[in-house]
Length: 57
Image (cartoon, rainbow, N blue to C red):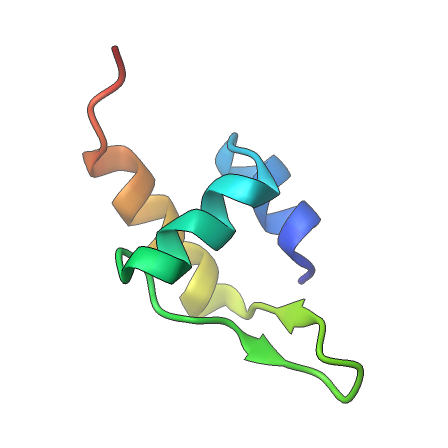
């Protein structure tokens, strides 16, 4: 899955995922031969679980 697909499923922006990766809140994505991020179901579940723990204001 691409970062945009994951963001749509989880209900956040792709920039949020990148920000979480940079600060270590979620593990860094794997990269394809072009350097683009890609995610599998395990990554999606991890991001979804973290998203559920974040308190929204």
